[in-house]
Image (cartoon, rainbow, N blue to C red; front, side, top):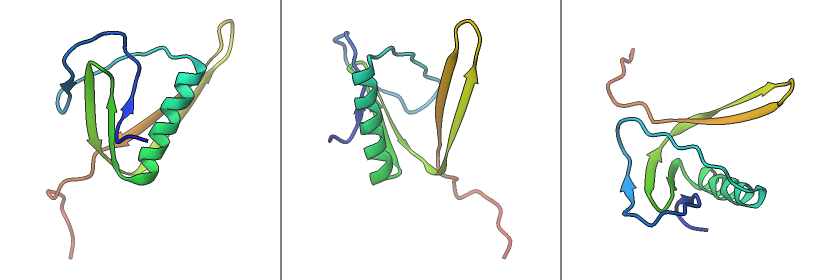
Length: 100
């Protein structure tokens, strides 16, 4: 596998690296593409605490700390929905208070 998790994109543009500010994209994938994305993400999580998510248009390199927060949300009713959210948090900096 590669060193980044690539999301399919139908645009051909210069790739932008996102390292600051706010960025959000919603992407709709087939079952097969979703499974492939999750496998690549799992490989990165298993191998290191550094991730790179990307498409043809953008990439986000990110270093995170453990634990990873996973939120599962279900809403039933007329159009039931299951949401699984992974939250990776950057490592704490050296500016923390400590007691010796």
